[in-house]
Amino acid sequence: MAAAPVWSVDPRTGKQREQVAVEATAREVDATVRAAHAVRGDLADRTVRAAFLRTAADRLQDAKDQLVEAADAETALGPVRLTGELARTCYQLRAFADIVDEGAFLDVVINHPDDTATPPVPDLRRYKVPLGVVAVYSASNFPFAFSVAGGDTASALAAGCPVVVKAHPDHPALSELVAAVLRRAAAEHGIPEGVVGLVHGFEAGIELIKHPLVAAAGFTGSVRGGRALFDAAAARPVPIPFHGELGSLNPVLVTEAAAAERAEQIGGGLAGSMTLGVGQFCVKPGLVLAPQGAAGDRLVKSLTEAVSDTEAGVLLDHRMRDNFVAGVAERAELPDVESPVTPGAGGEHTVSAGFLTVPAEKLTQEGEYDLLLEECFGPVTVVARYEDEDEAKAVLSRLPGNLTATVHLSAEEAAGEGRGPELLAELTPLAGRVLVNGWPTGVAVAPAQHHGGPYPATTSTSTSVGGTAIERWLRPVVYQGAPEALLPAELRDENPLGLPRRFNGRLER
Image 1 (cartoon, rainbow, N blue to C red):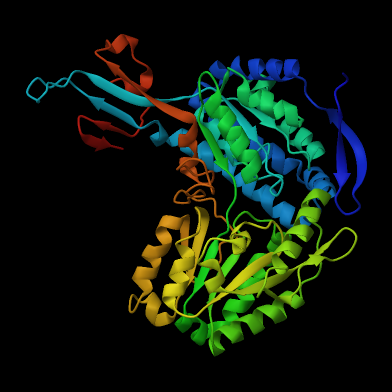
Image 2 (cartoon, rainbow, N blue to C red):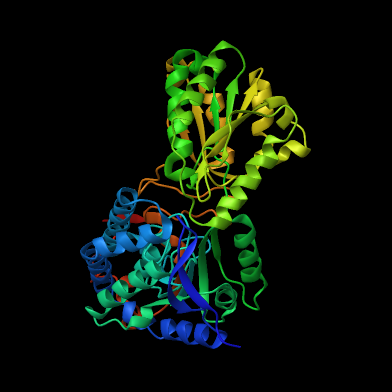
């Protein structure tokens, strides 16, 4: 059977633009993985791979105009948003190059023999080594930052792992362009092009996760797709780590005091966050707990005005548009659910932003209203009006894991008075990032960042954004009693590479 063609599609019209590639066969996936596996030694030198990461960032920036044009044609996200996302992607590559140069991620620990200890301590030397080939599954909504050159790829390469990327079908032409840029950057440092493999097609994605030379995987996408790959990774004869970001409701709790203090400001901020990027952010606030009463009414009024002024937008593809229109219609049909601004179809190819309201009491018991506790991808949120704090806490207790959880407090509560500390403690078990008086959209690339959370937000405790994302692709190994001459340079007493390390219990920088 001939392989199916891969087309670039314009989401503004739903029409095919050009044939980009063909779906990879099992044999082609095998060849791509084996080419990546063969390149592992070429990434062993930290100096070389740090230079490769910086060159990759430079070459992506050099190709900015071509890349942004291609990305906009396939995603309709707009040049401004895409230019910023490309800049973020380049910054991330350079940040990982700095991490590689520093070397702290290797976690070097050396213990000399100590016969006086109980039990005696032999000569032990520990550090971390790369896992091997990493499979990266691109996201639809971030064609740069969570795709071919995104955080999974950057962190894997920084760890010394070649990658094979399964391109997202929403931006195949862009994926080919970015992969070509990365390969050219690799060639400038004598690294074979197999260091960044690229395959297209659903079946190719299945073959990739099953391949015996794939040592780990990173995924950003739906709960259904991610869970299927997660299960496949666990069911292999040799299971592998699967770091998946699957879905998140990102709850927001607005206290009565906060609403009384600044209802209009909160309503306007919520509107901006839930409609940003046509609601296609994994950290979009999808559930808001707001108080009943006059202050809560003011918040809803402000939200209504702001969302009503939001223009219809284009989603990433027509399948997502159909799912959004059907999803909001099904939710709006539930008894006691109201639509102050009705979300749904904005035109033949667009969607209109809106939000739903429901008494919070409906969400405290298992039943048909559980649908409102599921993520709906697109520009919509659910505002649950609570009678008292106990009712709000009852809703929170039913939520699954999330990437983020937010609380809006009054000035007095934020100063540590009243229930502020207790509410922060209530949210902490729900998410990997807890915000106070802010909005979750916008994930800074910073050393302290954590982009992950309890299942189903992610399938592991790791982050896909920030410097510690590199830890996903490493494993520790310890050498016991090895002669100095046999040890890797990272573990020798004289520290020829100048690495930060813990030497006989003392931290050396």
